[in-house]
Amino acid sequence: MHADITEPVKRKLSGSVTRARILAAANELFYAQGIRATSADRIIEQVGITKVTFYRHFRTKGDLVVAYLEEQAAAEREWLAGTRREGDPVGSLRALATDIGAASCSPGFRGCAFINAAAEFSDPEDPVRATVDAHRAWMLGEFADIAAEAGVADMDGAARQLMILRDGAMVNGYLGEAETVAASLAAAFTSILTAAGGAAPR
Image (cartoon, rainbow, N blue to C red):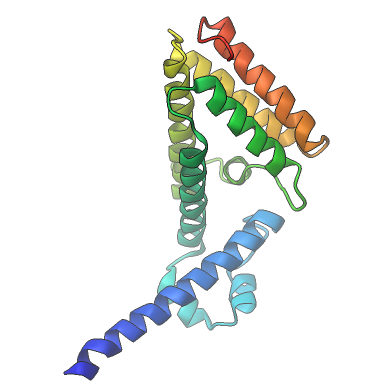
């Protein structure tokens, strides 16, 4: 009886570990080399598994790309939840700007994983693009919430402007320094709220 119970659990744990290893390799290779430039065979080779094992976890490379982006999205949601300061919209934007500046100027940074994926998957019906769009919509909603906290009437318009600033800062980080990018982004973020009639900086 004991063996009957534990054996499936062992298999499940082993499968979870293998899946995590595949995703870790995909995270590294997709981000550094591009999604279309990275074949399933390259990931299989890096993980050290058979094709049968790979396709047991991911039926297609597209399924793996979606899982990779969903993992990235979960990490960003966790980061944003830990960075936002409830009741202090300007403080939230300054904290976000500091983190974006640090990330975008760090070694190995290759831009936003979702913007990169969108550039490679232009078909709006593709599950990969749908995953990108869903995450972008969530992020836009977070900016809208921050704008609403600041008392901005047109929170959706402000959110779109904040999103454009965020995207631009991530590109600018290639050429700038973390503190400079963070300070400039924080000032630009704040100016959007102020221009829209939102809360004044503290």
